[in-house]
Image 1 (spheres, rainbow, N blue to C red):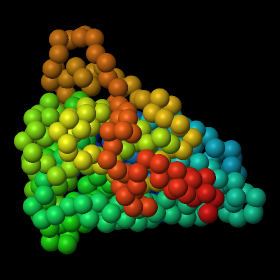
Image 2 (image 1 turned 120 degrees about the horizontal axis):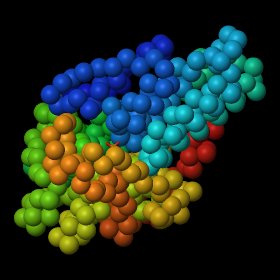
Image 3 (image 1 turned 45 degrees about the vertical axis):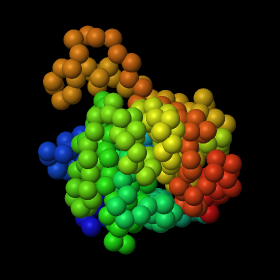
Length: 347
Ligand code: MRU
């Protein structure tokens, strides 16, 4: 099974990103050497997916330029974290990873340890932990899947969105590794087509069977009765289990409920924000009108059409059958039992 590597980094001053805006036609890589370039890459969705932007931002902190003197100071690191944190508001993984980097810098200063190796070690740990969490999500989710099952997914919550085998797609990959054949129905995911451009490309490389549908076809497909479950990722899960994920997820959850199809949200604990009591507390990113008015230069509305373009929506907890986490399959109530982010950060 061949999965893409959206980030390549060997602890040096350069990190190589697979530019996801160019897929699927063009497998193009970008070398990032500054915090500003990484902020641009995150904001433009060259690198995307909640866990992956946390990892990318953590690595970018290691690229912090020294303001004065030999290496970056705590102030330099704090400034880099603030700059990266402003790139996108909804995925809590970004802030979580940057909090860890800032904390590691503070510990290094307090212990009089050299800053650069401490930052590199923390960024690598964030990546390694994400890879392990993806595996555990995959193992928990694969128990739900049998040979020949069909699942439906939205957006891309696979290897292109994480440091490992993905979240929503991880159960599919684990099932496939053990010889079960799964077909994935892939929502196109308007307006930026993360489903048809990215998920379809990734599944094809992995040798997983897929069928692409336009978003408006999902309810009709669920009515057919051949979909075992819906699997989606999350950008942030509030304490009550409400889920912010790619725009269109809420409608999919409503359709799944109407047709009695189980709806699972797959996410690592770094996507759980116990400080947000419910979905109303989650900031929703609004993106440029041009993303809805057309794609790659081809207009799909009259020029200047008024549009509304929230990048995410909130699915209420009552529509979620279960949460596939690195701590296993949980109910909304059990999410609070996952180790709080602060404890993870302070290890
Ligand atoms: O705007 P994107 O492409 O970053 O949105 C991605 C999603 O909504 C994913 O479903 C989510 O980040 C989970 S990725 C494992």
